[in-house]
Image 1 (cartoon, helix red, strand yellow):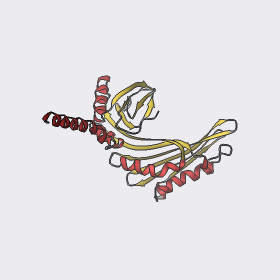
Image 2 (image 1 turned 90 degrees about the vertical axis):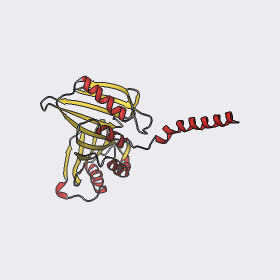
Image 3 (image 1 turned 180 degrees about the vertical axis):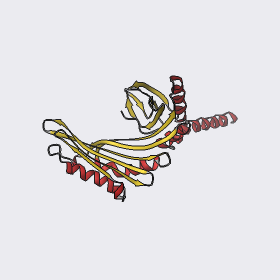
Image 4 (image 1 turned 135 degrees about the vertical axis):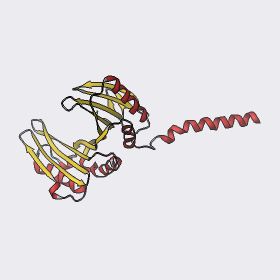
Length: 253
């Protein structure tokens, strides 16, 4: 009887251990994960951003009859969706030629919250244009509103896209230059904080990027045929003697 009881207790203990990862999965948002990771980077926060980009839904756009007015209507509609703005803080711009047309808006929608909307079309064949849209919500010098910005953007943007990618990011800065050893130590520290494992590394155009993956986060991108949901990018500007870092989730493919 004691042996049976011991087996039952041991079985329950093992089951409880197996359940722990399942319970933890999804408890922390990807935005909160990169905030907590950034907080151990010792970098100064410059900007936090949520960017939604993709193809403009065909109900707002005609491939065969492109019109700058249609792009304007979409951009202005997005602006209204974020509430009233002081008209003096809204900047509008449009550009157009035979192969490209663009309408963009920049607006301050709160004390430290800004909106960028860009709608444009490109000629892809002799008689067809493709429509695109980018919507970015960002703040300076704080990570406080990143999660709320993501939720706000998700509620508003869905109708405008036929396909989209939403990426949250934090941009920070160090004085001076990070060497390879310092970058390696930084990426290990940040990826360990997000409980993710590095899956890819690339150097391109004076930028070093490392990508990591953890199954505990829902959203991911395919980078070099590997799943990745966290990206750390580092770029050094010699003129300023400053290193910029960006921590983002999920990365752009």
